[in-house]
Length: 446
Image (cartoon, rainbow, N blue to C red; front, side, top):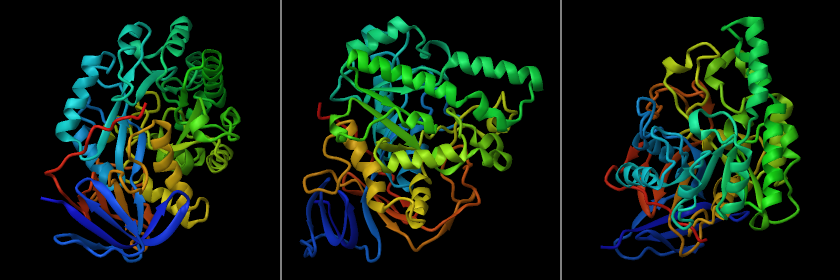
């Protein structure tokens, strides 16, 4: 039986163009895009009058906490929230318990996702100081990439042996994604503030402790090493104005060996928000100054920064409500990232076409994901319908994260995601989920 859906009269956003048209989905695939399509027999019709149709957001950095940290979140709950938020594909990080630092542990995560994930998925293999042999077994066609923590991690996931680091950079052609913060600088800064405030350091000093210097020192060193070794480097969650000048925009994304990502929270919040939000906006790297925030927007718009992500990293409210030193870093974002960014479209900060480029097209290009990230005939139908005239307020009643809170609580957004299609299936329809169909493991054209 053919699963056939026709989306009519949508404002289709694709490849720097917005046009009124219809999209026919048959089974998993977009089979036709045209100004007018007549519905084949037994085709469900969805009227998209006045709505944007965009390719689903490919989020290249999430922490869904499974296995081992499932009191905070799991793949089922967070992928469900992601789908409601217009994210159709996610790439999850290796710092779970146990950490995904062997091929067997990595495959265990793929098995959980095959059973439970509403969205399409991939996972990163975690590099350590002593697992190069395992790392080199990673299949580039089936796994998103390698993740290295060059700061802000514990145990053996902190890769702080420079010889090992150079060996990893020299030995793999896969994308190496890095968290860059210099641990020595952070420890030194923490000691200064501990001496002054004891265990009760005010949260407003978080961006001073995890400073511009800590970020720049680490990211510039990683970039230098990538240039020396020819490694394919992707720098996660750039958070400072100074770092944006490390990246180039004079060549197409496909030719770049060094790329950069910015996250929603660094584009939305600034250090002025710590007074109201406290540890609820404690992230690593830290949300920094208004100048940094504006510079990140500038770099995103002029293509020094290539992709947008969430770094979705939930913790329970009980954990987050601890004092500065005890509260973990990270927060839940996948359900509200797209609608938050659509506020910036409404405000004229970014165009809808540019937003789709950074959320959907560029992650697909950067990771060489097969047949996703665009509204094209022959591509998987990972699609999202958005009603920009249907406001919603974030509240405890409508939050889908397992942790039950959001840094956006109380915020009213102008837009609502009404429909999300995953592989041609309508998985989310105005608040109602299809629980019978799951996402797929994505593959890579490498």
